[in-house]
Image (cartoon, rainbow, N blue to C red; front, side, top):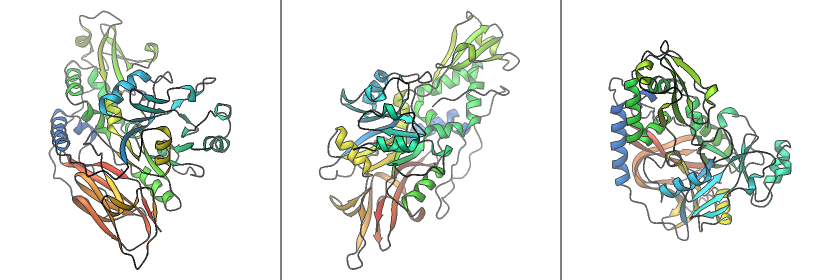
Length: 455
């Protein structure tokens, strides 16, 4: 993810608003967002969200595991040392993956000919499994073997080569290609953090105004220090556009939904003194000569901010997306028997995965299946045949009580607040569930299951 700074007038933006009543979800609709991003970034809202997240994390009680199945925390769409707009390295990514318990990293290197992205990190590194791949043609591709000679071919030719053996491909940045055909694709992204950032210019402009103000810059630095995950998560919106396409496509075929972490560790804002009345503002991946120059006319606090510093000095640095924060923000949990590339590829291709926002609470152990706990007849990604003389139940088990939405063929058919959920199956359809958690008086999406396909 790379965002160009767009700076308008640098007057300070009020970040807090009057307290409003919690809105109950409308029947058949996902809960509405309560706070704007700027409201979420206020000191009061950050502290309140942090307190609720700490409470939720402490209350997690995972359900019993499925026999022979492990729940591996994975990350799709990860960039490290692969472009001039990527700020992090593979070593840094590995360190942070170990810090937060990430088991699998699907790399999505930007193609840099003549380098072959399949020659990058692969296999286990200090207990973390790396699977190479690339972001190309609007897709995340993960072939088993090199396809470097086909990277400049049309998308159809490339996909045929990628899909040999256990190769996989996923539609990426869905907001840019809603009508993209799904032929030859394993799945698609359900959520991409980059889309939230692009859709929220007000908060990006606010950050720029804050980092060139003496008082607000201190407040932002304090917020990032105390509440890094709450700051990073402030832009989150329910990915309605992504999910609508997914529901439409799964009505015709199995389409596996994965997360798009899109982490680069490049959202590290810096302020560099030019002279006593001006600064350069940008990120660590920007060339200083291309950074935006702001003067005291744009922001009256600049002379005070730069006082006592030599020209060229970095007088402010605000790291908004360290890998550990970005990776825990959105994940793909993979239900597989073992942590090896073959087992992980097989589980993902079968749709035995769910997407989650782990920073709210650890979702490990979540289950969605037909049958009985411990002995399901079908789990996420499976097809199950409905028989009139054999009644069956669809069940969801959560590590925490949540607001649960059951969705069939893209329409909500049931909703409740509970830790477990049961639905008697009496109609065919594509069934999936969402789990939401209440944080600072608003519901935030926590878990998105892959479907059970009832025929």
